[in-house]
Length: 241
Image (cartoon, rainbow, N blue to C red):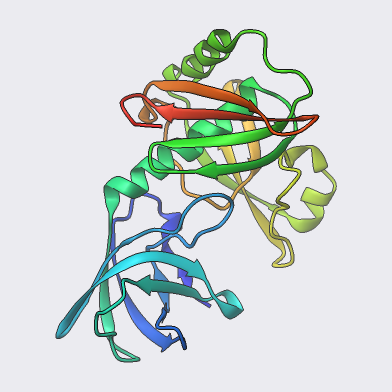
């Protein structure tokens, strides 16, 4: 099992060791600063260095038995098993994912409807909602979203037992993806604290430490994707999409 160093969301570099190589050229490590794709958030990219080599990591994926697999760009030489490596994130890309991921949690606050899907990109993202009718005032939604950003609320993590989550199904907003259970506990992401808490939901992704780090948000197209399903797109100000 790989140690999930990426949970220290602002850690940009870390040491690690190559545990094994997959048949298709993936690199399984004992500790990973790279987030593996999941929950709508893309896998991290960056670089690894070792004695005698350097390799670009294109993405990161979940492997067997809780392992994390670094997926290199094609064409480079792989490090040997047991090699000590230095991992370096593509930080600008990761930070964009963190800002968008936290923004989507805020979107689920201003649109308090069941979430049927979602996706995170570099500077943009979207949530699908069980929403029979389109919102009447998109500008009001955008203003409410940016008001939450401006409050500069803390974003922290907590944990709940599997039994505790089963007893509190209202914490789960997503209809399409269920929280990973079976290890005994589930990670929760909390926005705000005490009387200022506005959101608490299961999530394994990476987030900014405060909502003020997200910056100005724009709501894009609201698309009809079925009789009851509507897709709400958002982007960070200054980013295409």
